Length: 278
Image 1 (cartoon, rainbow, N blue to C red):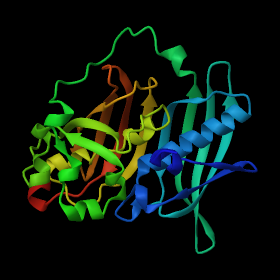
Image 2 (tube, rainbow, N blue to C red):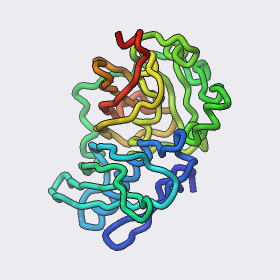
Image 3 (cartoon, rainbow, N blue to C red):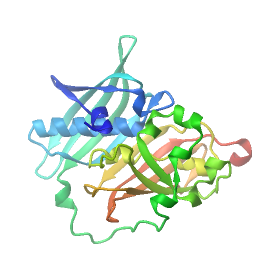
């Protein structure tokens, strides 16, 4: 089983699903939010199929209520509606804390048949022209302390466009844009569910604006538009509005054929040095 397959492994437990979170998918001490969303999408799909509904995640809208950490995790999906072309579900991601249930994330998921919505393409957005993965800066070249603090980063092969990596060297461009390539470190290809993880895999775009510290997500909405072809994913993150310590972050994902397969928008909170904020 692949590393991501193991991380997303769920077992049915009555009406719920159970899994296990580990430090292998953590940033610092908190489980990556994209992994929690992928788990929610998988639990929704499993519950939907069991009830005669649809399998593929089309959209997921989530609010993050508390940081996830290593240990058992409970997924509690509820089917809200089963229609002819789409199924709507709600999923709570829960962990125990001192004997009490603590909700980590709550999501609404719309499921359908991705093949039905793949063609015809009447309008789309092309991937930006960036250097090849071999010409981009690898996360493996990050300072050792960064790698030690991020099991999540070690699970990925992440390559950044050199034009958008100045923030890592202490010289953020101020443009509010990151571009690059992504694949899983063990060579496994992304599928429809794991695209929800890919949408939250890059560093926060606020780093390119000079933000400091943790950048927690307030609300996240992701859309899956197709099952990705094998190979590298290409990502572009950008922001259009930053004010009062909040920013929107938009992400677009193209597969190895150049087809847009996922996109998202999130509202996030960020801290900036006083000189920047002024």
